[in-house]
Amino acid sequence: MARLRVAAHIHSAFSDDCDWPLDRICRTLRRQGYHGALVCEHDRGMTADSWERIREECARLSQSGFLVVPGIEYQDPTHTIHVPVYGPAPFLGSSPTVQDVLSHARAHAAIGVLAHPRRRDAYQVLTTDDLRLASGIEVWNRKYDGIRPNDWAFEQASTHGLIAFTALDFHGPRQFFPLSMDVRVEGEPTVSNVVSAIAAGAVAPTVLGAALEHALTGTFGTTARWAESTRARMAPGVRRLEAAVSNTRQRVPRLKR
Ligand SMILES: [Zn+2]
Ligand SMILES: [Zn+2]
Image 1 (cartoon, rainbow, N blue to C red):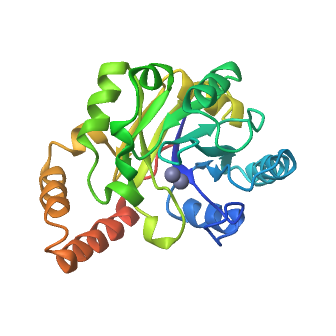
Image 2 (spheres, rainbow, N blue to C red; image 1 turned 90 degrees about the horizontal axis):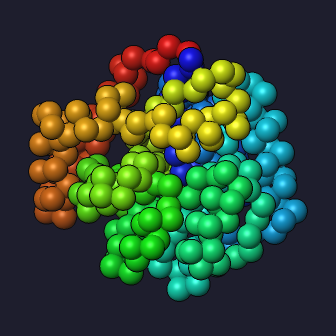
């Protein structure tokens, strides 16, 4: 069995709001101790052809041993709810309904995830059917949740048996943060085996290399909760803490392959 530390929700220059080429992101993540990435390019502006090019680039980069799973972040017709779909399912078109994306993901053995429920108060419009049909939910999105996870999303993950995802939502260096998904893969660590392992729940969200549930009960959890809740007033202090947490990632022990 291989254990892989994977960075979830990665945008690259294939998205219209990121200018980092995918190969540069992968090289950087690899230096940070990750073994792979779950790519998540916006559906807006995507075509069947560009999706094919993204899949080819992911396959090419994966040959180096750093696994790159192709994925698309769909936005619903009101642009309120975002749904990353990881795995090589066909492109469904721009701005489909949440139910259509999640059904499409399930039909193609891909992983449909409810992203950053805090953004635009998406959590208020997510339905019970959405939560039932999804495979996972982001409990900690670096871009929207900052340096602490989202309690509401955690609750939904446990109520609906969803895979809890940590996600960088990478658009630029500010989103580098020691969050990962640690995947246990039976057999060869190929893209399709990694997708199947995540879909089967053989995965755990981590922060600083520790399982999220343990990390949150310790000092880090207390500090992060305090810091995020006072973020507005204490912005410089939070930035110092973020810098300290980011520097710590160099000391996180690497997982054995
Ligand atoms: Zn999004
Ligand atoms: Zn995103």
